[in-house]
Amino acid sequence: MQAVAENDRMGGAKASDGAGAESSEENAVDRETLGRATWTFLHTLAAAYPERPSVERQRKTSLFMTLFAELYPCETCADGFQEIVANHPPRTQSNAAFARWMCEVHNEVNVSIGKPVYDCSRASERWGTCESCKGHEKELDDFLSIANLPGGAKSKK
Ligand SMILES: Cc1cc2nc3c(=O)[nH]c(=O)nc-3n(C[C@H](O)[C@H](O)[C@H](O)COP(=O)(O)OP(=O)(O)OC[C@H]3O[C@@H](n4cnc5c(N)ncnc54)[C@H](O)[C@@H]3O)c2cc1C
Image (tube, rainbow, N blue to C red; front, side):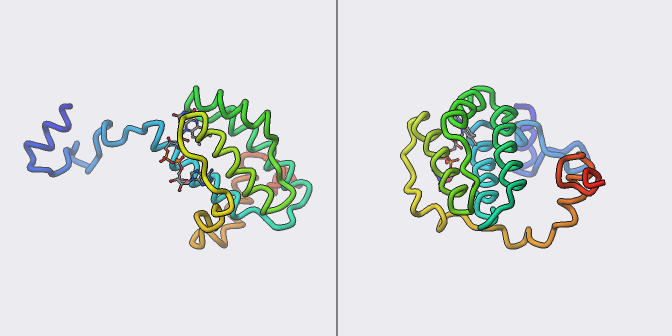
């Protein structure tokens, strides 16, 4: 609250430690904010998924979703999502299948927390690929390589 009081004293200006730093309250993340940001990421991941993915891409995507469900940094959410993914294994054979699967598992979460079911036939209107993100294949390869993940240059050696 000290930062809020400081803000008031400063007539609405941000409290600062001298370098323009925001207070920890301003930076706090709650379950809803994390959830919205994460669904943006997951639906964008699905929208960008290839029409005809290689077997390796399908394997990595399924593995990613399994690990994601385990590591999601909200404990009750992770517990619930692991169960959802276990009961609805990722469908990764095509862009349409993966985007539909993502919508369906999001709906499973929606139902579990009393939110309305989303019309999955409209999901592709809501979520698209990130145009400004395109053209970063080298960065992705470097990342996979540094993390020593399958697909990176290091692992191809
Ligand atoms: C993996 C995961 C598990 C979670 N588990 C929990 C939990 O157990 N308990 C909890 O309280 N919160 C949980 N959350 C957070 C929760 O799902 C919401 O993100 C949060 O409540 C904010 O909801 P929102 O109404 O802003 O919309 P969100 O559910 O965050 O959705 C964002 C936007 O996506 C669109 N949308 C909604 N449903 C769909 C769909 N099915 N397909 C495509 N687009 C859709 C809508 O335009 C919506 O505004 C979880 C989040 C994630 C990512």
